Figure (cartoon, rainbow, N blue to C red):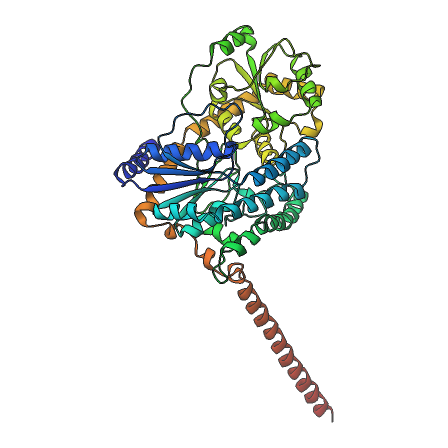
Length: 523
């Protein structure tokens, strides 16, 4: 019966998709790397399902190093920031990554990079020609991504409805979701949903601390808002987040902890998944040399791979040498230190087909930086992990991986030959990790709808119904004192105090009357 209901639900969603009219949709990506890849995939999915899609993106350093670009069927518009800004941003971002990899990353340094994104946004909003061109297209809907908040301001300028894609776990940004402190970990708390007393204390304190950090991040766009929006019409960035018709979250409950969601919140983790292709012959030949031992895949993301220290490379190379498995390592050969001899069982490549290698039957382990896209891809194929998180949401993602028993996390500051070898040996030899990874794979695959179907089905739903007002709680329109019942609490408190005062007065009068009555009887 449940299976039949699932099929009916899938049919209704797909029917709605097929019967809906093609809409003009603008997707916006103002940062590169994995964020671009995510928006590229969303754009292609919507285009393949009959919509007319245009992507507007920042055209500098858009692609991951070595990435093989595929042909697009959707339209795209590139914007190139001023050259002096590009140099300043690249210089600071290089510094930020080097500091993070040297274990000196701080929130203040991250805040500076957000401030530069705010400046980039100001440059963009000055381009009246671009904004007029986008306005003249008269798009029906915008799809924005949430690492940079500039796309929200673009949507406000164009006065168009928009949906938002959150590239990480929902706790990373306050989008109005109910978040009970008792079992929803605050972002950066590094807690799970099963907290003891002291965990609850930490989570409560982290709630106030992280709320302050969020306000500081959003405030980096205040000068841009003052410059480009007239007084009386200046949006509040936190309000714009709640203005989104839908929130698509790039995660899945195979990784995330169960938590309350609103009707306009949809999980689409695994949306980057593509059909598996045969791997290149040179990689197949390398894997074949290790027979039943199989191989380990190592990919720490394009940014980490570019800025890894020689010491880290040496420690990792020495650790890999201890294993009978082959190791395929995504590491640029041109950056490999000449004084470090590559281990005999290691092959380094500038680019690798990660999805196809994760699906290979001989894979035994994935060593990752803990980026959400890599984790979703790994769960897709049921492969256990060792994570070496560096910054951003990576430590938080790996907390979830450990809680689900899919792998173990090794903080960058503890990255040594012996610690990495021990973590890898633990995950490869303890079959419970592989079993948990396969269980997560079942959860990920057993949804009645694929992530792409959920994305398209819900976007078609709001296009057909004229928005998602019916999916948003009235709480988004309430003043904060009403939302938290402070006025009701103050009223009841006042009523209680007044009642107690009145009872006290009455009791005092009765007491005095009884006292006088006794005195009269005695006389």
